[in-house]
Amino acid sequence: MAKIIAISNQKGGVGKTTTSVNLAACLADFSMNVLLIDIDPQGNATSGLGVEKNREGMNTYQLLIGGCTIQEAIVHTAFEGLDIIPSTVDLAGAEAELLTFDNREYILKEQLSSVAEEYDYIIIDCPPSLNVLVLNGLCAADSMICPLQCEFYALEGLSQLLETVQMVQSRLNEKLEFGGIVFTMFDGRTRLSAQVIQNVKETLDEHIFKTVIPRSVRLSEAPSYGEPINKYDARSAGAEAYRNLAREIMTEDGKKIKYRKKKLFR
Image (cartoon, rainbow, N blue to C red; front, side, top):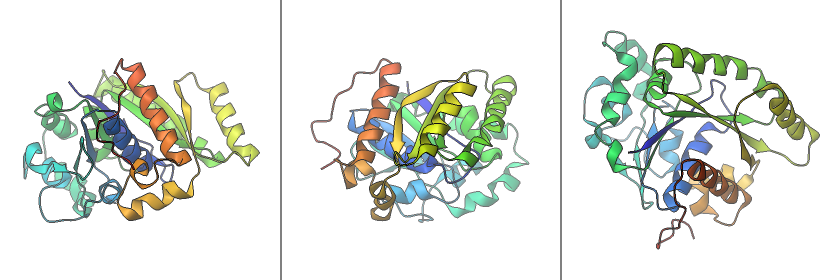
């Protein structure tokens, strides 16, 4: 049975999609079967794995409005063990359409029940907002991971995000766990990055991952080539960081860590 993880932060530009794509790819590299679901209308997770955005065919929009089954929406990527349900710009208007649907927050959860046995992990890349798309992700998830940029303003929305998680837990999905905070865009040359991490550790009684994702040119370049970082530059600091994050999560879940015989990266 798959563990379903929503990657979410209501603030944009914090490395949410970068984390979704590269965590999914590194989990696949460790012999896990992974499904990445892109429910962000921007579709950056889709293009980040070399799948065309707004392509003809089935996608998360069609899935949510009942235009296809989840099996029809799944696309096999070029990376072994890693599938995706791509996004489309049509998702931007999905909220208005879904207002008339009964149990609209649970559509994704109901669809995932038919494929959960086929995967070890399902990663949901949520949009940077709080709308019916995000609620679908959080209602379907077992756990939510929050990427947090190592900058001062990133802290401002954190308490609101935690309140959202508590609201979902109390009203919509009592099984949702706060999986933890992963710090992103860490710059060791500045004092600010270290101060942000220290402030969060001192003020929050929440799980914080040991792995810290560095600010990296290679991480920024990889999406333009349609590749995750462990394919684009396997020896980079960013690739090693996301492998470490995948190891942390798998270790917490009691999963055995082993590379595929045919490695995902060069």
